[in-house]
Each structure stands twice: as C-alpha cells, then as structure tokens.
Image (tube, rainbow, N blue to C red):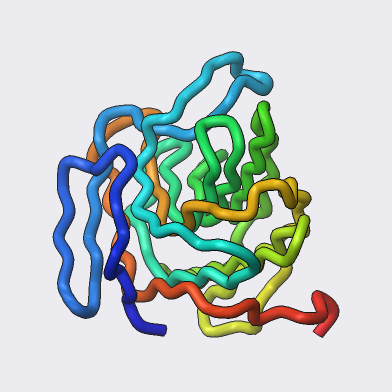
Length: 193
C-alpha cells in the first residue's frame, strides 16, 4: 500500500505535520476527540481528520503505528458526514493496552473494543462501504485480515469525507506515523472469506 494524500484537506489540523513520499508523521493537539454524548455526556468534534470526498461504495485502507501511552490515545480511519454522523476505527489505548476500537455515531456515539494480542507496532486497517453497511477489518503482525465489525451507516449519506483520523482526549503530543493510505473500489464481496 502506498501513501496517497493528494487532494486531502484537514478538519482541525494538528500542531505538527511532517509529510514525505513514504510517511506522514502527526502529533496531536491538546485534549482532542470525536464523541457525541453517550455515557460520558460530552460532545467533542475537535479531533484531527485528513480527508477527501468519496461518493458511493469504496474501500479505504491505512497502515500506521502510534506511540500509545495515555488513556484514549487513538489513530485510524474515519468516514464522516458531519459532527453527528460518522464512523471511526483503529487502535485505541485503554485499560493499559492497545485495543482495536470502533465508534459509530448516528446522533449519539457507541463504542466497541477488542484487545490486540500482537506485539508489532504497525497495524493495517480497512473499511469497506457497501450501500447501508460498513465492513471493518484489521491486520497486525502480517497476519490475515480480521473482522472487527459490520456496522449500519444510513444509505441516505451518499457523499462522505473519508480519511485519516487521530486524537488524544487526555493529553497533547500523541504521535502517529502513517506509511500507507488509499481509497479504492470496494474490495470485499463476501464477509466470510
């Protein structure tokens, strides 16, 4: 996977961005997050998101690593309509470990996590949008793709912003390094390979 960043724009640009042909190094601003209401009661829309517009079905993929140290440090992918309709997925630091995390927000946010058992720093993530569904997968340590979630996302939202998202709700300076990002035609036809 190569790093395709042409035509992408920032929502809440982070204070540090260093881009080359092979890597995008990012550091988060102070207490940034995407979340809407559920359980915690707060509404946050100040996380960092680098995206481009996509219409119809697609697969977005990324390979990256992060210096996960503090509760809720997170990096991955996002698709977004607006502040209250979006989905983010990737690695999140919680309960002292890296977890694969998915948040779907249709008015209010939900959250699911699964502890990662791999030791490698790099992870690959992909989300495939097909009609009213988003199929989310991850791969670590060169293993096969693992299903993380099949999520409903309203089909009325046909044009989305899709890209890289990261944030650090408890601190500033969380560093993530992306070495691959691309958006292609949908790759997954059957979720049961």
